[in-house]
Image 1 (tube, rainbow, N blue to C red):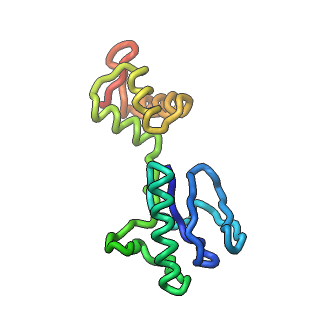
Image 2: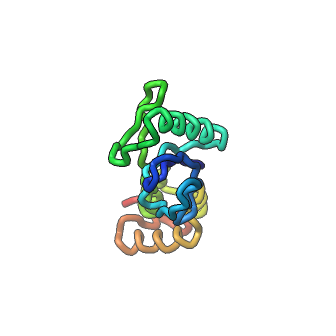
Length: 150
């Protein structure tokens, strides 16, 4: 997964960002930027798609005298498409577990954990959140090794 962003400090350089780092550095002005405050274009599944988008954004920046309004919530590409600039918020493990159980009904705990892992919940977080959901009464165990929503 890749995102494209424009440096909020110099507003002249479009760059690629792969989620995971807490800060990124601008290649132009060398500013250190907190990634949680970036307005981004994306997400792009492949590096090639992200590079293509970065090139289009950089071309648009060059055409607009190198300035970019960070207060916009979306930007129009040269082809006329609007692109959302904020990354989607990641769902919390609790919501992911509830969604999986809503979709599948009563499940074997191991299967539920597998589906949740596919959606980004690690095993330790799954166990902790599942225990809290059972304790809160939102999820119950109808039989040994099974879980279901109340």
